[in-house]
Length: 348
Ligand code: FES
Ligand SMILES: [Fe+2]
Image (tube, rainbow, N blue to C red; front, side, top):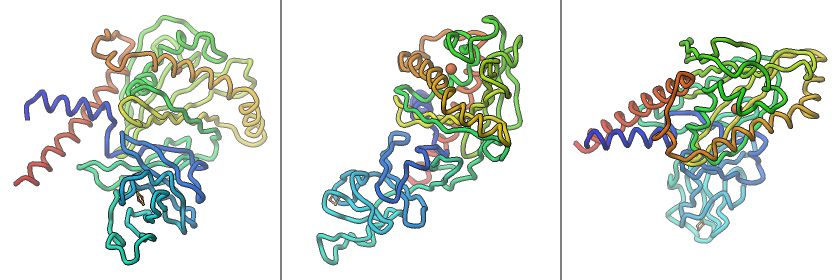
């Protein structure tokens, strides 16, 4: 393999999404005992459902008989039945029964890949194994989502853009006072600044030098062995009532090289009666404002060409964007090298 081939493998891995990661794929409430849920993750079709005990199964969305989507089928006693000719597969991807054919040899065969699944804070996470990390490490959630003093709402959205652009957008606080200049919460602060970048215990923080607490002025990325996420604060203007900033925790899931699913928890640290009044105010009023802001991001990112980064000219504000890309490329390189090595060993 030439150096150029390897470079393009690495580039493709970043584009399609890193393996060896937990990714959120759905809200918990969307996965039911009554019908299967079809999704895509890193270009692969998967299907999820809950068995009678509430446990979630996730396997390839492909019937071992002739390839029909299992997600068009139905749940039978905790297993999934194909709509086409009735073949029943369990959560491990093993054929349980072929009802149309007595004593069929397919029964008992492990036919499909199954995935590790876990739930946290109203979201369902699926682990995509990698050659160097076949077993799922612990899913590390942000501290706000492990604490009782924070409360909030999970919102998800599908964006027709590469996941890298969604990540870049989060590593770029400077867009707040421009793209969101017309919004309810982000219309404040100065439009000129420098950026700085600091290493943190598990990642990095990028922030405006001249302003903190006025607008979307900083963001932080945490990178763990099996997942990564970002968080940032949106200060509330006085019109939003009493209380501090709103914290956004974001996870970005690559559906394929052109589609992304974003998971944002919108959180506030409020307890007692203030908590209920905030939750009420959020649903009644604030949620719509936040959707409008998110739509501004979506529309902008979807409008950018897939290969924008081949022609872009970064400047000082793009420190966070550059660091993020460096990290993704480094992780992709380690994965590609591990795969090349495994292929060599297999060929010997
Ligand atoms: S394709 Fe699924 S049972 Fe035939
Ligand atoms: Fe934004």
